[in-house]
Length: 114
Length: 113
Image (cartoon, rainbow over all chains, first blue to last red; front, side):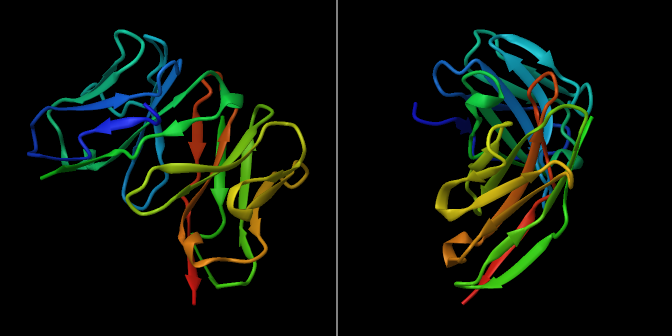
């Protein structure tokens, strides 16, 4: 597609529920990133894939967070046993390569844990 | 390690007057620097980027930024504000091995009619 697509656009989860957030990057983009943006804050890095390899997951806040990109295209961010502090906008970005190619961000998934 | 400090959480200007959004950075590497804009309920849009070429970078919608290594600054400017410029602006630095981005906390730009 023309841009990075994320679904669902909004998700309301009850505390303790598992959620899965999807990211469809731009076709051919090698690099894929997940960011978490809390209300009133800047996005914070969660994890990074190059093709199907997860090269950096240092930003994942706990072992309840898990991300995968099994075929090097679509990625899923899974959050187990959601907590209220997980409420945020989750942004996905993709890039053809490194910094010089720039990044394209999706519109994000707004997760609200009640 | 890298970090970004946006010096103003809110900036208010009148339409037609200049805009200045301030950003200071810290990086262990030769940094790449970006400004992104985020309109309500919209995705992040790249305004401009600096990647060790010209220190004065021109972006979209009349914005530009100047990289000043001696001051570790990358301030964003626009000569004349337009109502459509009202949004959240993020200064971003990259330079780590994974090419990940480190965002500032954002500056909310308000345009007064």
